[in-house]
Length: 296
Image 1 (tube, rainbow, N blue to C red):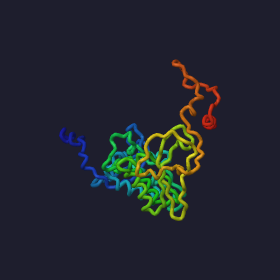
Image 2: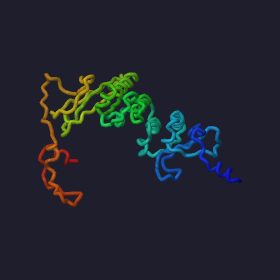
Image 3: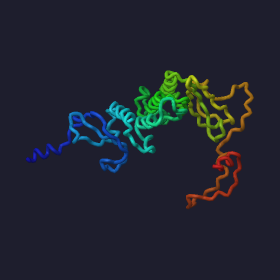
Image 4: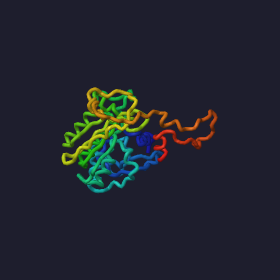
């Protein structure tokens, strides 16, 4: 063999010569000994014989979503996906997590689906949010998967939680999408904005909650506040009627608002040169909240 032939043999093939024909198998681990565990698919390449089958990471198959979808559906039918439970939530787009659900539950057999799609693509702290096409952000696609799971399993009830920015970002596009998906699946739906401080926590922390119920069920109400709160933040004007609160004419009888002092005033002082990671706290609880959290 000439040197030219040897060079041709070792030269990497252009990426456009490889096109996924179908996926054959799946594993969580490191089949190629790269030093990084992850989710891998065994790939059959178009125009190549089985001797060229190779293990590829899921991140490298982003251009083949239909092949992944077909594999998940086939895995459901043939029961060929023995994956560890603890790894499902790590899968991009939630496809294998969806498979796990549909593998063990039949349509109509689930009472409740409860979840909170990731907020990184929504949060106002993210300066690089996709305003024009929010669902093109991979993190926001989890919302689509969540609703797809609901559509497949048809649970009696659905509860979804997210940051309030889901109703602010891009004119509330993602919040409206979630609500419209439930309604289009003939679910009763109720949107509520709830503040953690209104339920006995020493912080404000407003969150958006979406209840869904089949027409045959009773759509649950959100619990009314038990505590007053130090107000922070702004309720989106378009959704101001969704704030869970008492009417002004109601007799509220709320407990007083909790502040940081209610949570931390029983902590011991820490000197500048304290060498220990742990300290014994000999101070008795000073507030009802401190007594409560010490029970845990």
